[in-house]
Amino acid sequence: MNVLAALPHPVFAGFTGAFEFIFSKQESSVTGGKKVGGIEQVLELAWTQTYVSLLALALAFVIAVPVGLYFGHRGTGELLAVGIGNAGRAVPELALIAFIAAIIGVGIPVLTIALAVLGIPPILTNTFVGVRQADRSAVTAARGVGMTEFEILRKVELPMAVPGIMTGVRGSTVNIVATATIAPLVGVVTLGDFILGENVYGTNGVLAGAICTAILALLFEFALAGLQRRLTSKGLRLQAQ
Amino acid sequence: MTSLAATPLAAVGEVGKGFIHERTGETLPCQARPNHLFCWDWATENIHRYGTPTLQQFELTVISVLIGFAIAFVLALLARRFRLLQWPLLAGTGILFAIPSVAFFLLLLPITGRGRETAIIALSAYTLQIIYRNVMQGLANVPESAKQAARGMGLTDRQILWKVELPLAIPEIIGGLRIATVSTVAIATLAVFAHAGGLGTQIYSEANLTFPTAIILAGGIAMLMALAFDVVFLTVQRFATPWRRVEAV
Image 1 (tube, rainbow over the protein chains, first blue to last red):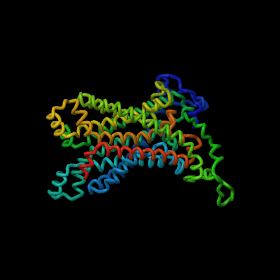
Image 2: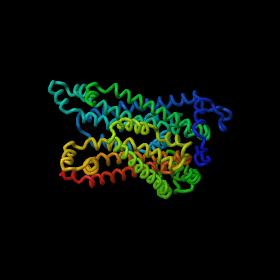
Image 3: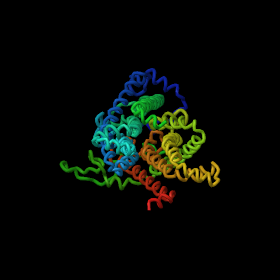
Image 4: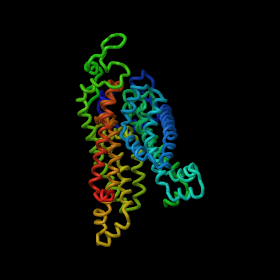
């Protein structure tokens, strides 16, 4: 692990070596003849990262959205909902991951919970704010036509909160995918392994890891942006134009 | 640069008072006991090690947010002037925001190598989206009536921008700076991967990765720093918008 200090300043090599690393296997000086890199390993690690990220995102979602909806509908707990969002931003990912590895242990379940912890605040806060910003006259009208509180929440406030919820999900995904990059610290080998294991993969591997991680994060971002468009009700979209 | 070699495993064992092991009767320093959450003795004796990393973290944050603010502010003014730029700027800063910071640091490897500059480039790129969005939001929230009144008083477009719109947008602008700064403090912990120092050096080392006290201490200092920035911005916001206080009364 103690590679940072030992290595000489990286050479001004350019990106060619990194792309070679992504697409074809390379010799490594420390794996005893076992080759590293290549598209198969890249895809395998990318899949692990996608898998734990989605798992954590799903966990964060099922916890944060109901809580946010509930407090948003009741109109209480604003200080808590916003406070959690603010506090969540201040948590240093590296410290959290290292702490969990040192105290609780390693493995996918532990990592998923840690990532979900980082993913909850943006979703919770944005869901809350999204519901609060739902058109109050629409809510009053819904109550006037005899909808129950649950119907109001499901048919009026939830659709109006979708843009807010999705903003939260995107923020949360940025956190989760970024932190999943340092997941090798809790024993889950994601693309970050290329970045953290410079003595195994070499400088080209580090750069290749950075490129692949960035691409993966952007794929998440684009997918969610598309999903947000699809989920936003037609009425709200027309209103925005 | 603080090298990891500065905190070798051996040094951890040298300090701290002895504790008697409950069953074997052996004397163990607090930090040698497994699963011990926090060693106060170690912390008080080693707190001096955290001075330089804390300062580095502070510098990384302040410089990155200042650069990010300068760029985002100019971009926002450009977008206000040329509306066609609004969407591409939002998308562009959004892409920078989505790239994980660890990856960003190392993407710059062939260009700027490793070091403080690399960390600052990545960290300020990360703040662009937050600040840009908030400045735009602030400008958009300025009431049309205020602008019309200013125009009626004979102010030019430029005067309206600087004397009416921007002052009225201060709450959102400071709100953006607040979010950006707090996030940057947390993310600057990862600057250790760019060899840029900071509190991450006290976490990411062979000795400390298995030593909860060091991790809690470094993480705790980072969170306190974020909290301090938060309080500073809230105070500034209060004094920069005196009309809001009048409204509140």
